Length: 230
Image (cartoon, rainbow, N blue to C red):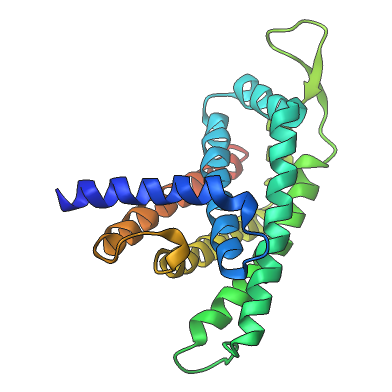
């Protein structure tokens, strides 16, 4: 019963944060939590899309085409980009103003968040260059004759053809996961999340399980793509 109540309260808190996210740009802590939750939701959807590579070329390419051509999805992506930038600005401001930047001692976790956050920014930029703006060949849409779409399936195989590149992607995913695990634990304790004290352990557990699942999906898609080329 406690687990069910905790799950319901956690979902309600996440939905509440998403609904109020647009009004929190002036509140550093609120914006930090809201933009973080937005990015986690995006990663869940993106992981589901990435898993389509296991189904086959056509399904994966159609997913990529819809993601890149649907105006609603494009608008959401721009909003997420703004959220990512604001997340970085808010985190940096909080970090400096509260002096939680020591390399040693009890505040090491804040340094870990800062370092992993900067690495995550670089990885997102690199990933966009690789997949969103990479030079992908064109293939015919499987259900719309005459319509040419980017062959993201082949592009991903090209990007992950080298072992070093594959290892880089796996390490990057792990760094992002560590950042999110730390961040979620901190966010759960914030008043802006509105999660009752008694339900916070359940919220942390649910978040950790979700992040572990999407991490496994990303790593499986990355390593699986590379192994298919051997």
